[in-house]
Image: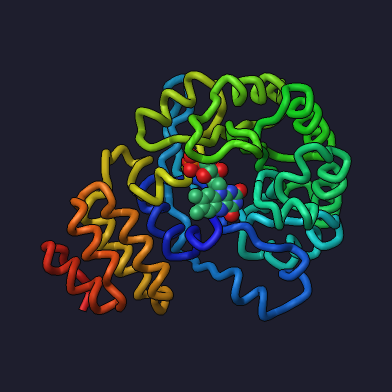
Length: 307
Ligand SMILES: Cc1cc2nc3c(=O)[nH]c(=O)nc-3n(C[C@H](O)[C@H](O)[C@H](O)COP(=O)(O)O)c2cc1C
């Protein structure tokens, strides 16, 4: 998530059963050309991936697996994507190509959702990256749903190019995120993949019940949450709302990485507190203008915070 899924937040959610985290969308051209862009856009740590017990079907012994970190890029030029992927590859488990960003500036730049109807360009982008980094390095794409024929063609072309998995956001590029997610269109995408690659279903996963329902209705192999996780980073661990300890941990983690810019720090906490605050308290919280003010506020609500 642009702005939000930076290192401290990724680290936090990895403590609550999120198996795969994605960086915010990074512009491949800038990332590949400029070391300033690289240090502004990406940082990681050995601690940001969690460890999980994976329970295979059929009652086999659970195994301990490490979580995965995926860098998401926006690109239209295969060389830029392959260059950016090569530069970031030592620190991530895979890269993802954004084919869903609906913003007009992205469309004009021929990135994001512009790619939805350009399967041949997606083919070249995926194939160039696979050729450069080898077939063991994961290259995925994240798409929005479209007319069935377009979705099917895009998925099948990406599979021919060597894509490892596809995340499908069940809204078209014209639909606002307030429109309910369309699960049958994700189910269609699962069928279009013909079992050749896993599909991750995305849209309106706000609770573990939603996650299980989405998985049942779409038969997708994974479920991605964006806004649900912002509101409750412990969602995938089964918490109904953000546990107080997650807020404490977020403050600790953000501090341990040298702190977050105030606006982002404040926004993250506001999202996590959203459900707990009445209107007056929200207004008060939104009026805070410093890290110290936020910490005082949290302490006043009984959260134990790092000194
Ligand atoms: C603040 C914000 C930033 C986002 N940034 C990205 C991004 O960088 N890359 C991407 O593929 N999708 C991005 N999205 C879209 C989400 O990944 C997701 O597809 C969408 O919000 C629907 O999922 P949800 O209903 O779980 O929120 C962003 C969404 C939000 C709310």
